[in-house]
Length: 105
Image 1 (cartoon, rainbow, N blue to C red):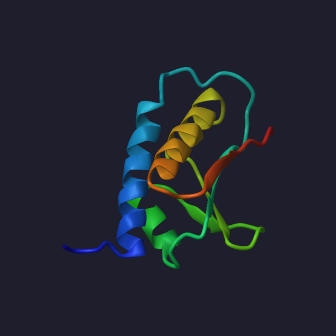
Image 2: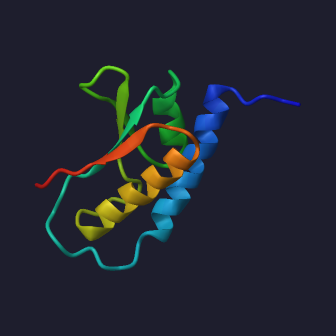
């Protein structure tokens, strides 16, 4: 039985998270502009490359051991929040510690 590397596990989780973000788009991007993002603890060391590969961006966070992941489809209201929430749900289902960082603009 083959065991997934941390990188393979993260790639699968992120691919599914980006798909979930797409399904969260409902055409209603009203509401206040925001800067919501995903916070994820202890990703693999090559997280930036994996995030780019699936169509989003990953950044080092100011908190040690955490990274920030942007939503993949560039909205700024309700749909940005919905994407982040959908992605966090998938990442948690894959065993990651993650949360939505809600930030009003």
